[in-house]
Length: 81
Image 1 (cartoon, helix red, strand yellow):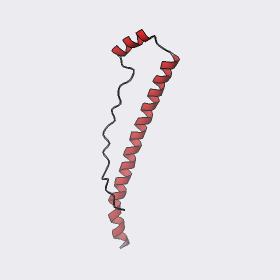
Image 2 (spheres, one colour; image 1 turned 90 degrees about the horizontal axis):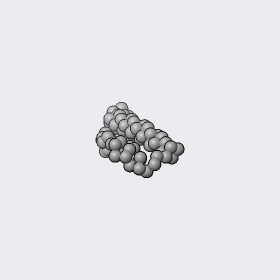
Image 3 (cartoon, one colour; image 1 turned 90 degrees about the vertical axis):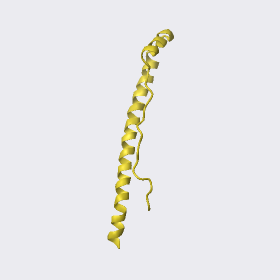
Image 4 (tube, one colour; image 1 turned 135 degrees about the vertical axis):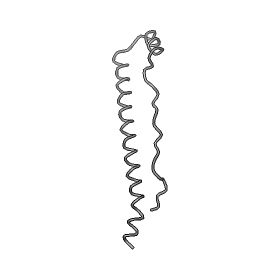
């Protein structure tokens, strides 16, 4: 009886571990992006640019690109506990 219960839960445990790894990688990406945005913000406040120059710069090179988060596909969400 105990062996059967363990084999039934093994796929669920593996799916949970995969989901945790996926979440961890996405959190690392978010941390890096937030650090880059903080650096941009720090630079903007420590070295202000005249508004005319800033408008010209924004037309040529946006200050930051919109973040494109990859679709996070988690393993099966139906866990029987």
